[in-house]
Amino acid sequence: MKAEVLFGPDGHLSEWSAALCVDALKQGNYSSLAEAIRGHVEACFHCQGVILDVQLFLQHAGEAGDRVLNTPEIRVRRADPVFVRLAAAVAVLAVALTLFVLFQRSHSPVGNSVTTGPTDISSPSVQRPDSGPDARTEAEPVRQPRMSAGSGDASFSPNANLESMIGSRSRSLSTQLLAPAGEVPYSHDIVFSWETTARDPLQLKILSNRNEVIFAFTVGDPPFVFRERLFPGLYYWKLESRADLLAVGKFSVRPATSPTE
Amino acid sequence: MAKRIDFPGSTISDQNRAILSEVIDGLLYPPAIYNRSLFPDLHECLTHHFLTEIRSRPARWKLFKDVGKRSAIAKLATEVLAPQRLLERHPEMIVLIHRRCIERFVAYKHHYAGERTDIVQEIIARLLERTMHKIRERFDFRHGPAPSLTSYLLVCVRNLYMDLLREAKSRDMRGTESLDSGMRCVVERGATPFETLAMEEESEKLDAILALYDRSRKKVELSLKIKFRLRITEMEALRCFPGLAAEELAVLTRDFTQTTDQQVFSIIVPVFNRHEEKTNASDSLRKWIHIKAEEIVAHLNRLHAAEVYSMDHLATLMAWHSRTFSTAIEKRGQP
Image (cartoon, rainbow over all chains, first blue to last red; front, side, top):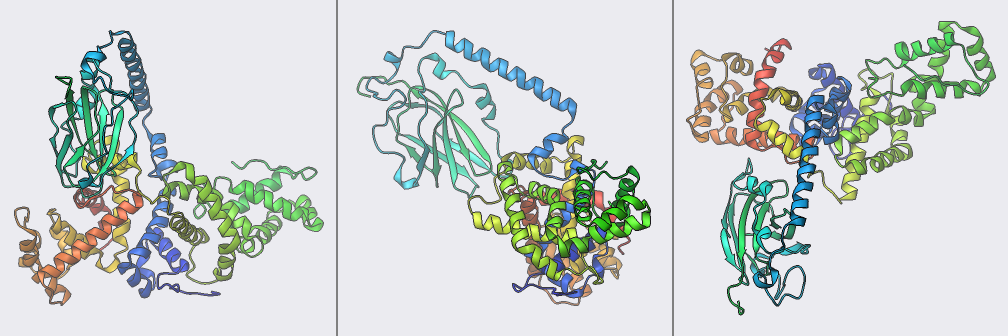
């Protein structure tokens, strides 16, 4: 060969040697490769990765067409037609149900926001009287409030989707939400507390009972003190790692009982 | 079926076209090596190039149009289309015929669909600018144990892809949430018929990873099964250590489910030491297999471009793998 080099200048297998390994594995004669190559691959994570990437790709591509790819798009193509039809029917039903609920809400009597909500809120969405999150947690809001929590009965009605998620657990990680639970008074700081085995930076999201994210924070160790003000209503909160929804909890903000509160 | 390529004023007979097609399939680019699912437009590319080339030389064009003999056309086609000729004279054609293959590879590796087109274009540009010249210099078809051109090119493509990722730094290979959650379910339950195919794919990946451990593969497999408290058969133990005595077999095949890691490895390490002629402490063996397990988990996650696997999942997959692959291993004739 013009330049048979088993190893590159970086000490890893050359492309030539890596390709030889790929072919040998494909043809089932890996043991016929040079001892130096096999010995290196056995101990080198990097070269194992190069070989695996190409070999598995070719191995799967050699089988019937679409079986290859672990991409979500390709998996959709493999889905059973019956399953697809069923999923489509469920999706149509879900859309119809959502439209129905929205229609119902838009025609239901509006709650008395003057009597149940705070009277001194300047913003239509949320009052933000002081600084953001507690400094001890070094958390910073990653999203601004987007909606009004509303008031009246509708703001306390449970969300079926979110309710079903309460109590569900991440498969690999153990997380327990400690606080808040139940009612918290309006105008009080809300202390979020939890226990988890997750090590990543976590996202704490506060959602309305319409499943809309109102606040999201990147949080460190608990507790996290939320100093914003939420309208009275039912809220849910989620704790998420980068890849997992760890837990879902709920709490309600009780209407102010006195003008000073 | 190849699409018909016609040039103005260059119609060729169906007979010659069929012969050209036969030569491509049977001689130059056999489907066994150039899998048509990876090279769906191979015929179009090659036929187009062939006609372009011979049209520029009237003598060859006349020969091709008039002769109609298989041997003459085969010779002509070999002169123009053989992979070594293309690599020497038209390396861009090698890239062109591998274009779909490269696209599929990028789709296989890169989960952000919106970025794939740019990545493919960048890889092809770099191939044409630099890598193809290097391949042309280094690749020798006459050399005995040569890899296939496709494998060689794909290793280069894979390395270019990794270079691009490193350069971009904007997004690492993580975070395909749907895949992540999907795989978590698959690995966790792994038993429903609908997911069996996915588990088989995972098993194949694990098998491919284990194959790279070569001489220590059997030891890795045996130790992993012990680590994960999977039942070991006498056959499996003997595959790893053919000269096991009866009492040693009894040690390796006993039920360790109620035993701690430290106890397990202190029980089995004398057997390993005796047959490997080593004097390892039990902790060394325990740490060694833990590192191997971590490597395998890292490979599996890397292949998914997501943190799909934990050690627990590997245990589940090992159990599945040893069920589905034990027969295959025996068929492969491993002792």
